[in-house]
Length: 399
Image (cartoon, rainbow, N blue to C red; front, side, top):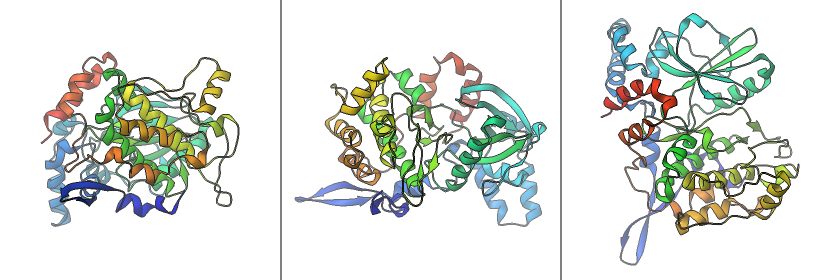
């Protein structure tokens, strides 16, 4: 990782974009506004309930008893109707698990809304509601034989609670060595779902998603963490239309002495040459997987995929990628910079963030799809019919 990949780059000066033209020169525009927007107090997954948040925030400045009274006035009936209630309400009801520490799990504290709502490679994923607060979230249940992986995932999540580009840890529990990780709810699932529904979203709509994914990776790399499974399925789409990176079951910390890691990682389609060749690797594994994933999001096809593993490895080792007219020149160049066979030739995350592909982004940085557009698109997804009522209510309450 270069010096440019430190956390300061992510949180304050992550990129310079071209602004309005003045004579023959361009002004550099620092996107502090975008960062401030993404770091705002309201959970980005729940802008529909800003009124409730304002009510609670105002109560905090008053007498504590008065604050509790106001919170109590958000009735149980309203919580059931809204389902996804702001995190402040949850935190006022329970003592949150801090610093990667497990709490004892009480099943009676949660009401199942939809069981097995998504597939997990080694976990069960359920949509549940915290009964006391009404907060709607995702419960990831990890079996006892994956206890080590669960602990590693919790540690990573606990380090990333200050990033607006990473799916947020709400709480963590254990019961008889089974681990329960309570996460914020992304109603529109993942970019894999969106990509398949839209049959590829194109270069322009992919732009902001790509930037937000890069900022999430930069946050991890600034803490010496490799995600090791960057792919559309692990990028989650919020009610706001923005995305967050999630699923840290494959993540690992780099060895502090060698700055390297080893072991099989990434999926078949996103695995870089150094992993196929059983070499030690570092930050560039996430860069390669990012480039392959962006290609998939734009076109709904994989750039390198063959049923024969031997042929797959051969294509990967040559970085055989072809671009159709679905790609803008800048999008193709971004992917090319990331998908280089030699890790040292791949651009760093900070370099990619500064790529000209992102130069046309402008304040107020609207999400590529509005919540109403997403709602209409997802209405054809029969596996989500049980949730569409909840999502429709959330979308209806957006400002």
